[in-house]
Length: 268
Figure 1 (cartoon, rainbow, N blue to C red):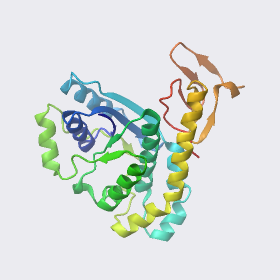
Figure 2 (figure 1 turned 120 degrees about the horizontal axis):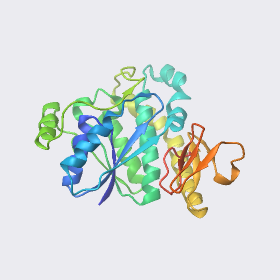
Figure 3 (figure 1 turned 30 degrees about the vertical axis):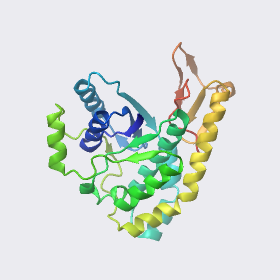
Figure 4 (figure 1 turned 90 degrees about the horizontal axis):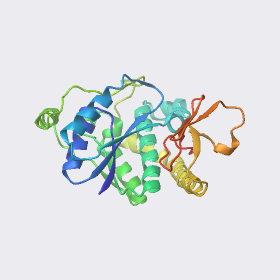
């Protein structure tokens, strides 16, 4: 059973990965960067630990920049959203961007399962409230994807003990976001209203992403993406381009893929 796991390098997503592997899922970890992360790549250390704890499993780590999508969903309307809801729900918007990009990847690669490390103990975060989780679950269901939260009911101590049992350290190794601790605790009704206000843009983003994937496959799977701007390889005229047998690099902020496995999808 193939799955994508939303992976930060923190304790919850790390244990969710372990549990998924033990449940029989083939796991590919997705680490998202919203463009505001302070990182020292410690999450890669945790990925290495998990690989060493499960030597008979292939556990790939995919790193994807979603700064353009994050801006589209959460930053463009930030002032209006704060005035409307009297709360900062920017972290909810960031997580929503992650889910939308993951849906497109699932449809592109025929992945039927997505696994997340949400926990009840962190329901002070809007994106980890039960209301938000149910909204996201129904969003995935709309596209025939099952959304799983295998460690949701575990306490902080339970999670630490279960990681230690598997030979994995218990220091949090996730990146630091510039928006950390700028969110507001919100009641479920406010979270749902915020998410419902984004429903139309969610549909547009996914539909454009799926359509883009079809077009990419038609032209051989070559595209350059940078947030919400996208150009095909044939339209490059002035960028400094260097070609190697395995990749194409461009001296711009763009990210490049030479296969259908594309991150940072042009969805705006």
